[in-house]
Image 1 (cartoon, rainbow over the protein chains, first blue to last red):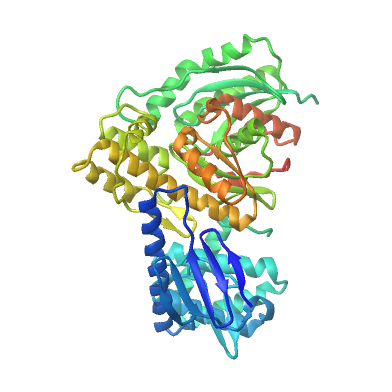
Image 2 (cartoon, helix red, strand yellow):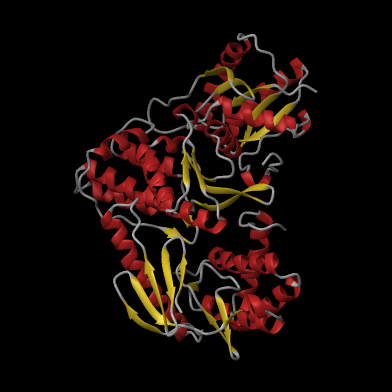
Length: 195
Length: 323
């Protein structure tokens, strides 16, 4: 059975054996720019996913890269959101640490974009990802993840410290980033959920 | 306590404007904008201009004879010297008339005047002016910033490019006119990182392109590129928050191409786009007065000793109890 999900920039068709993510045309921008962006982003997303995989992060296998669409493996897993515990949060921290030490920012780290299958956690949806080594970008990435913990899990404090423990174990620059996360919280800038 | 009308004064940068506003209308408004003869806005020159003209601007609205129940002023963000000039006048007025004093956040005022004028309720706002470029939406009691510029505001970027082409300040409207004559899109950098955008690299590339392409084409490509970045982040914020109203605010909002793009984006997702009447895009006293009225109603008043200006005042520092 196929399920269709619509985001701001893409339509994702989830079938049994494969996922097709198509970046849709935006009529508000000129054709040259629209096509360039959709083409470049589709390619970049495929590259970011395979780079993440090389860093040891489970991501769906890419079967095909079209002009504006990606065909990839369907991960039959459970969103971390539904099964999270301290161990899961620690594992998520290890993954994000690996990703950041490899110079990748995920851009949309939520417990819905992490799928648990067996003892592995798959990271999905690299649609907002980019290559960056700036402290601020890494801090925002972790902050966004913390926000989803705070908004949807009552024992978020334990989960946050478990995540930080995992993050420190796989990323040398972790302490500096976690300091920045506190500063970002204090600024209130990215606070999108009730405190 | 009566809460029918407020006298508001705006003076964060180039604009110096005072108004008396009630719940359903603007009773009086007077303005004396600072227009640099050459180059961009010089903070001290702008403050000097404001202090020379603030007396006559306030006199004009007082001469309307309309009574007011409080005095509001633009407390920030803005240029320190300009803010202090306006705050001093506002304190003096509040003391002389023995009415409450309200410090208004300039960004919040742009949103509130837009909501007031268009009738939209709970929009995602694209606020684009000289110094500011932000995507905001109400959540958990405040207007949160969902995305913003990492370097310069879109208005400043356009003005700088305008000066580079030898156009007089402000360059935005002149670039808009030139862009209408543009025919060929030139490849320029498109920088959206997560929910944020950056314009400085785009500006440098546009300057380089101007050496080998007609200026009409460069202006056209520059607008298409920069506005697409803003519209994209606005759409993401709408998808993320699930809101189906979009409001444009700030001086650059008067650009018809930007409005057209936002409108098209909204239509495609079944949302509604709102633009206030043209006079409310630029900084104006009415927006400060109207927001001051909301604050007065909700007891958000300042003692004179607590009314220091805040050049880096962020909109998400302000409680919004009225939404």
